Image 1 (cartoon, rainbow, N blue to C red):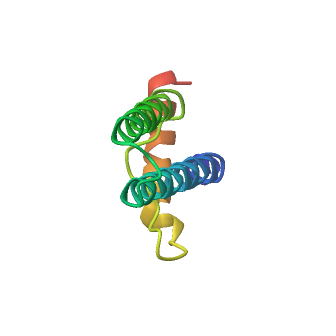
Image 2 (cartoon, rainbow, N blue to C red; image 1 turned 45 degrees about the vertical axis):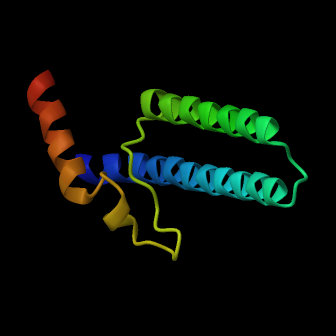
Length: 110
């Protein structure tokens, strides 16, 4: 019963975090592409390009650090090419949730 409960509670949250990170990475790639296009068309100077890219990458680095530390992100993202099977992309499979429930019960005891 504990495995089912932990899987039902934790897997959707984990999938939501992974979805947000995948989306944020896509937005970063779009912004970098836009800046690079502006630079190649001489709409953005080299100094502005360097400054903007550095700011974007530092902001993304801080975002990833926060998601790893506060949201428990494990460094794995969703497959951007399709709708993935939840079991394949989450650490909260039934087996791992059951193991966690057993560990909690044996640690706490009666």
